[in-house]
Image (cartoon, protein in one colour):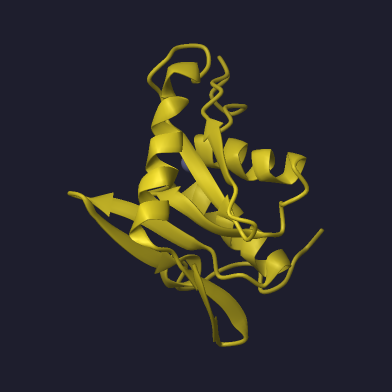
Length: 140
Ligand SMILES: [Zn+2]
């Protein structure tokens, strides 16, 4: 991966082989979404090159449901890499975009959302998906 500095933030360009691996890792865990297999999943890429997957964990209340992206972000945090996330698979719901954006505020990395569009990987920094973001700095 190649690092650039854009508007004071680190932005990483991910090679297509790594993008492919991120989606493979995501697909490997789709059987483990909770409580039923086949739900939403995601994976994150860290500065060290580790790819951590996450699976949706549904609650009967719906409100308490954990999205695959949140699970993947948490997975990286468990390994001590919560502030070293450079990319995440997408597309993502707006709740997850907020969570990704908030992570980028703390890490100073403009996390790249990698989307597989008919076999072509598109990489969009989270700042590009959050035109009027809130907050401007971490609140907690
Ligand atoms: Zn989500």
